[in-house]
Length: 326
Image (cartoon, rainbow, N blue to C red; front, side, top):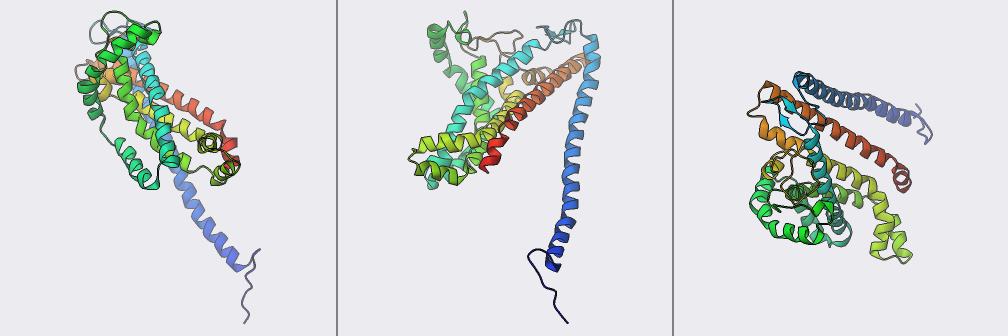
């Protein structure tokens, strides 16, 4: 009896391996497709719920929902999302501007500068910061940061008051947009730093060694080989942090003064957000008031989707470099 010859190009062994791969590929494809469909279904269900609950309040609204600066759904039934959406976007953008450079610096230090004995514990510490409850950040901001920023806010207003963000008259400091943005920046910093660190560690070593072999300094090597490769990952991390900042509730509810106006002056008590307004007003809201708050949540839902879609478009433009570097 002869034994079948197992060749590299084919034969019984190759057919058995192909059969095992095909038998495992079907269930995995089914499971992954099902997970994607379930996720889309959940998002669609959330959208349907928000729309159905918001329609009665929007029909009862006596003002323009998108431009009105008054929020009185429980009384005169006049309310608008303009001030809340403005505050949400401005505070989140400020937090992102503050947190992203620091987070990228921390990630680069852990991945390419720190000794291995220090990089491990420091990475664990950054990861643990992401697990701190938001109410702790809010209490810290209310008790420590708000009083601490009084003197720096006055100095910024006196010396840089010509710049719109630092302008303003009257009360300077206290519960301001700046205080809330700093708290949000501290909250999203560990998320951006942790993801960026893992992306930088995946940079092709051959590119880094080639840059160093050509005489580049460590910073030049990072600028030429690591940052271009990690840019899509940093953008993804920043967008994830931005989504966290936009949806943050308790921390900003404790710090923001809950005003309803449009102001770029981050040193004066003018600040609010959609999530903070929902937290402050849901307990005492009438049926129309609850519908108005749900309608504002729908706006936040749409804003978050648009931001993530924009981020995906930016990341897609960097795929060619990532594919070439892999």
